[in-house]
Length: 412
Ligand SMILES: [Zn+2]
Image 1 (cartoon, rainbow, N blue to C red):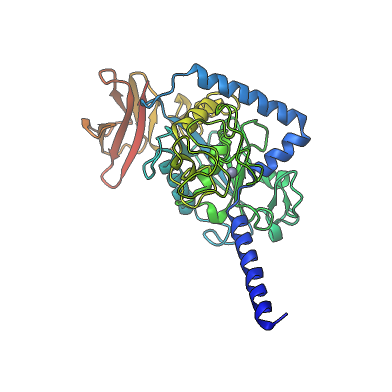
Image 2 (cartoon, protein in one colour):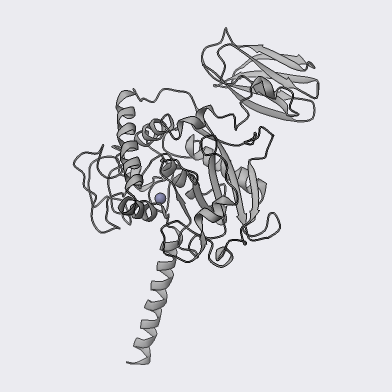
């Protein structure tokens, strides 16, 4: 072999590894874990199939359309499993980065920066912990006590890679899954093989999603992708046999990703046309958060229907009535939070707790931005009457002279 061909061979070899590395780094581990469990765990398989039946029925029984409906508010707790770094360094990402990641997640779900639909689901960092105390919704734990975590990160249960045991790592910090959607931020998954993975909605102590710290950012496509799995979305290329064949497409309600407005495709097909089918809106799949394509900007109406149908069924339904996001009961009136609002949602009246008794200017704003009412008060409890206003979403602007806070109120 000439030096020249050796050189070419070396270049090809390097390119292969580089591309392989890039593909691996963009991957989500959900399919691998799900498929393994479907084959090896009969109980899990039964749960998934039952959930599928319920979600199909729920989608068929509900008239889903583009009109405004109740925003489902999901309390989220973020556990940062770091390697002992200072806060804001390495895998121990800052509170600000986490808050911005949740804002970015919400912007993708409400389509404020995309080309899809408003899913009308909102994720809030928990403000009340499982013991009823106020919280930032962020827990920090050094994960290095778990063997192999420091060198390789977490190993999802059932995966042969070397790393820290998933259950041991999650046992370091987890909150009840009935009241909180758990997000574990980790240093690595299988030594860099995956950027995230999530549990399909079958419940259990370890339900939630795992994401690497470098993907827990405001512009992350990984976070909405994994939350999508958490609310029972499959990849848009589901059924492609690992990029081998076009997914079966006889009945879009049960084939492929089981969503009818996302044309089936192969994982790596993201170009101007879809080699698998000319039917449907191709952009809905190749720009979808549930694809592996490089540019993503949407969930579709079909995906929204599936996620919202999932949200009202166990195990996710209890999240909608959780007090984790500070939807306050009377027992919390004496807590030291400023500007708490209850009850929310309300049918007529609501009150604002002004525990510091500051002079407040409170403006009630409609969802289309009109100022409906302005009130000045220094009372401990300020009451508002919404009975003459139509059902829907309202915004409260509360100013205490030093800062302004916004609260969302839902009238049911
Ligand atoms: Zn995925």
